[in-house]
Image (cartoon, rainbow, N blue to C red; front, side, top):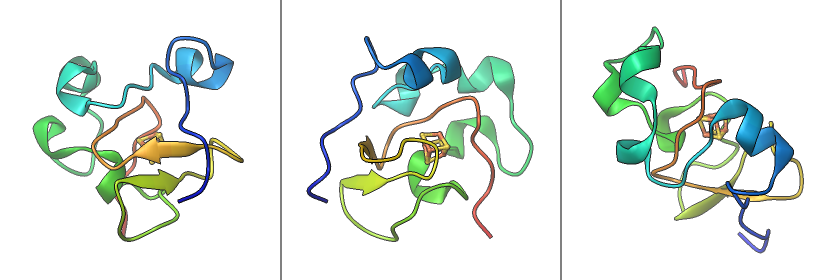
Length: 80
Ligand code: SF4
């Protein structure tokens, strides 16, 4: 991906959605989103991830920016 990475510290969407590049440091356990066990939820298996490979990927919730394959945010939903 040529897109610039989302900055979790300053991007308003990232802050609102509690996005982090490392899901192990996210609040996924407390949110316990349905679809997969919390400790298996990452951007790589999220429905909003617009790529199927790559460390940095486009996400439909972050237009023009890249999220990390191992990231997580509170909008996580299982990719079908
Ligand atoms: Fe990652 Fe999904 Fe959140 Fe996008 S919507 S940042 S792919 S968890």
